[in-house]
Length: 520
Image 1 (cartoon, rainbow, N blue to C red):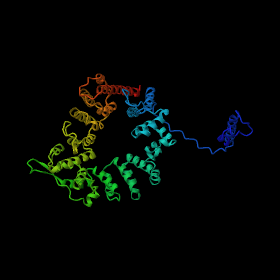
Image 2: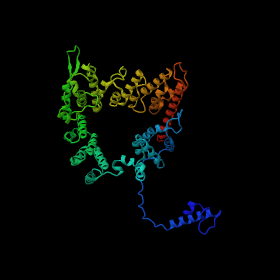
Image 3: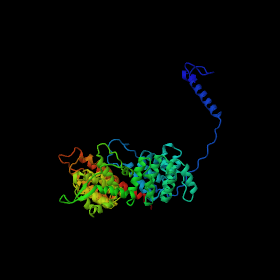
Image 4: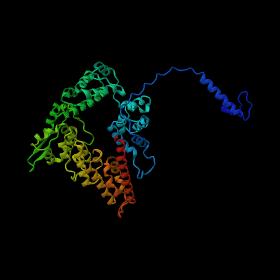
């Protein structure tokens, strides 16, 4: 080592004269020493042989689909730098490919598992579909590579087999002695099979659990929530933790027949009434003057956020938690549409309608959602309260897919695409024919008007993933470079042409992907 550091010109190796052969002699000596050290190393204890991965009985992918998966996984965002031109964004098509492959029940090719897990590691939105497609082999690999441990965290019980209902002793042992993740997985699995048994199991240790654990366990009761859960949730309203009390109140308010829902209906009903002295029937509001102990116990948060009035804050919480079915009887037997159409005195309209919106979303009430949505042509589409785009998107999620698509198509036909991005995001993929046609027509109108093209790039990207591939026929004529009006953005025509070509290419690729995945 010393000779190597000093150099053979300054210090020759032992028994070797200085000169041209000295470096070779030094390296020979190092090689001999390396072999001697390795040969003299004491053998370690043999590690246990790895258990093989569990078999995956699902059918293998068709060869063309397997090749397509390799291409999708090899694509990297920004790999080409700058604009993509007319090339499809393959990574954005991966979620659809995975959904289709899972729909057909295919097993992932073993050689693709590392790339699949790497993709899911970088994109959390891919993880459920990737883990479903990858199957038991993904969990086997995740135990060997810390980079893929997210797969174990996502799997029930960390990938371990959970005891079934025929093993009550093992269920009890895992619940009392298992890790937190295992207990959550056990409770969720048991809740899916037998809601009452899961609730009874939770009750056995409820008083001894930590507050943060009680909150997580309570959240698992959302699945299969029913009237039989009311006594347990009613008792949780007296919990030491404010977050636990709030979650219990939210769950109880989702049960229209619960005692809490009745109490909230009584409180909210005392604040809202119809007054006939205004010339026309008008809703009048008298917000609560205080938040008493009973209201707090039922989940009303007393302290209002900064910049929010206390009385309006309390009113919104009461109306949101009250069953929507109580309002027609309270307000003169009117339908939800008639109630929403009534004028509201003293500028309480936005607050009241916003609370009804939250109630309709929480209670999944389509009749109230339709009333609050109004017609797609309403001019105040970007206004506050019930008519804001964010509220409308949430209300749309309570409707069936065809009705949702029809409403958004009508909205786009009247208002264009500039405000429709949020609404398009809640529509089922692929978009229904009327909705897809409305999007293509609106893009065509924007192109012919010489609109600034880059402001529609988000909708274009959404259309690439969501438009029905059958719409490709209509796009042929839109790929040509249009004549640009005098006031058009510089280069707009070329950009529009490039965008439509990419959209057309992507739709054709999606159609090919579907055909490759279709069993012969």
